[in-house]
Image 1 (cartoon, rainbow, N blue to C red):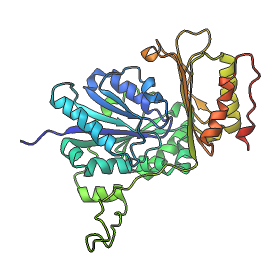
Image 2: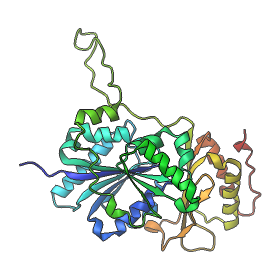
Image 3: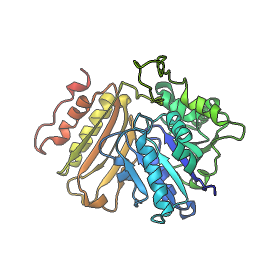
Image 4: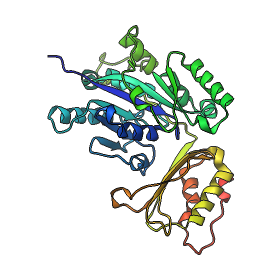
Length: 360
């Protein structure tokens, strides 16, 4: 008897585009059914998991590396484990959703879903959803090939943050998206509102597309085998290796964890200075912050110099009161980013360190 395959949706989009906000909307919507979510994060602190207020055992956080990189076994094993638990009646879910890191090229991930024997037998790719940030989208498409790939491979493009720009700019951006991918569905959304029902049944593999055609599109050139393989005893047989995507070498990330609360003036000064001096190179900054005199934590996130209003959470996640901040930047090394945190590490009455490192 043929096993019914579990529909799988790939949620992608550039850094700060609003994937986590959309995911929260999906998890709040009871009509979405039971969704098992796999979350991946580029950075050490795993903040996307903390920003998801509705968490359960069906939400799995992998911190072993980006889904598009060479550590592919984790994705296959994680999905297989979920389906195994589902078959043993340990958990129940109707569909799978993978939220990728903002820097992930969906091509290698999609290719893995198609050629992995276990995944191909137990899951079916239901659709690729890309969240495109209208405020920073044009610059993102100019600077990051991964963003172009995310748009090009999407079945559904959700345009976010149109309220932050003029109507003419929003129309121009959407026209550019349609030029890159004329066949994708395109909708606007404000903070994920009203979109959860439109994420499913997208049929990522079109009826006229054959598996070899899709594999060729996602795989690119086939890897070359050793020409001496199996001809003599001098060359051992090689396994066929799948290609991987490399992050832009100009991109660096850093994180900080603080046990003590931070003065609000110190935090504001650090963030304002960082934005003023290198805002254009800050691809993403986000965190959970413990402010002195405030019992509850607030979360913040922004891209370049555009920030959403901070949100005060009802309580600390898992009774953890540490401040955790992640920065992902262009042309900023991890050591440089770590030195920017010195202002937050300094005792409250100490003079704040300068930022000479930012303009070496």
